[in-house]
Image 1 (cartoon, rainbow, N blue to C red):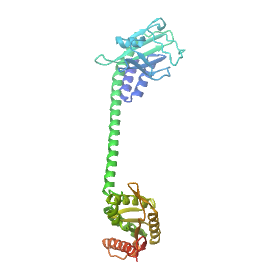
Image 2 (image 1 turned 180 degrees about the vertical axis):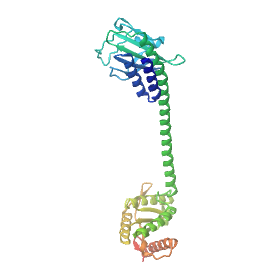
Image 3 (image 1 turned 135 degrees about the horizontal axis):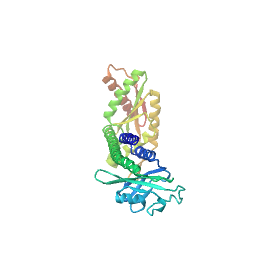
Image 4 (image 1 turned 90 degrees about the vertical axis):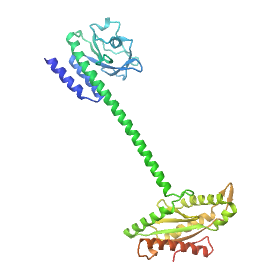
Length: 363
């Protein structure tokens, strides 16, 4: 009666465990205790390599020990799909003694009880091997007990393996979903970048300028700060296109933006406003600071040598106009933005009128 109760308890424990690694250790621990064995090992079938692979082997420190199907007691049990009870293992020629890393275990097997793990269709899934070092062979009651454990273990192992496969499939699916989601986000980011970027120069476009201008105006009003605009264009740019060609003009525009970017702060925004005309939005920057930055840009461009088709182009200069938000007086958002742009444009025009290659602050 005690053995039956013990088997029922083992069956309950095995059926409730879904983690394969914990289940295999549980099977070994319960079998060792139930049969009063010294050591118990559990081998699972490795169909790809046609061998039995030790998943849990008490007393053996080598993980994933593999036994060929045609060798030893374990191989015999697997091939014949029958229980094998060996009273004196030392006299049995089928005993498979594995040498682990060149060392022979001091453990001496006296008796051994092996049982195959068979499903309802008599298909092999593995082998349980129980061993004793003392002189007391396994009896018929032990055979009945290990068969009962093997029957429950086979079902539990199948369910745990199926659960692991489902978890791995779900994890793989989640990885794929995460990768695709990240890719979609990157594509959306690229599309958003394209939507707000000038294709030729890589500067932001006019539509994004209008959006950020209104945003910066609201921030400045809320926190009592200011911001500035620099508007500039290339002096006599038409002559470059007419003399060198439009390809040369495009090359100048690209190199111009690359050079200006090296001077700006990370928080500054550079826009292509139209044609060869550009604007720079300078958050939290007063008129004086913006004027100093505009002068630096002017000097750098005047000293820069542009190239196209391995030909150098010098004497390219800029005219710049600078305005700060607090310099304007407007009644509403639209009027404010319009006034700000008009003042920047007028300052740029004044630089042209005064001889070009200069910075003019808005009055």
